[in-house]
Image 1 (spheres, rainbow, N blue to C red):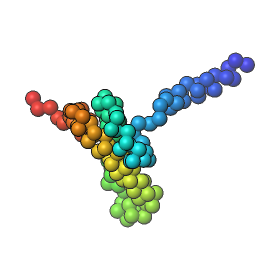
Image 2: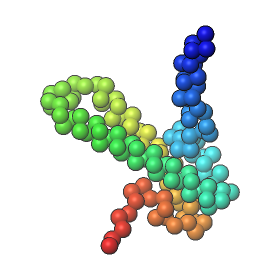
Image 3: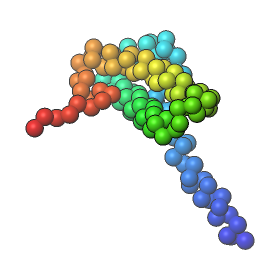
Image 4: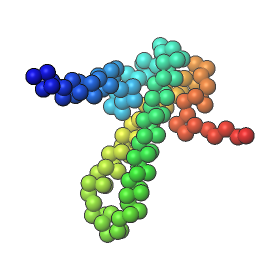
Length: 129
């Protein structure tokens, strides 16, 4: 009898990480709301949001690179016939643009308040030795 509940417990444990705070890097978050909020945000919070958006943009870039790799392996005539892949590419591009637009707002406010842009760059700079 007790063993029947084990799958339920496992499912609950697997879902716990997804019940936290709302996603910081939200491509659908209204820009006007962000512009109003950044005025009163402390530097640390601006850094946190800008970093979250930068990470989301890097993730979109990785998705695009994965699709490009798929395209390289496909015959050219199938690339243009694959409507699913085309929709995926367009969707990722649109979401990436929305993320970048919001990232810029946080990054600009972060810099205006004296933050170090190197901490929130989308592509971290390579240190020269």
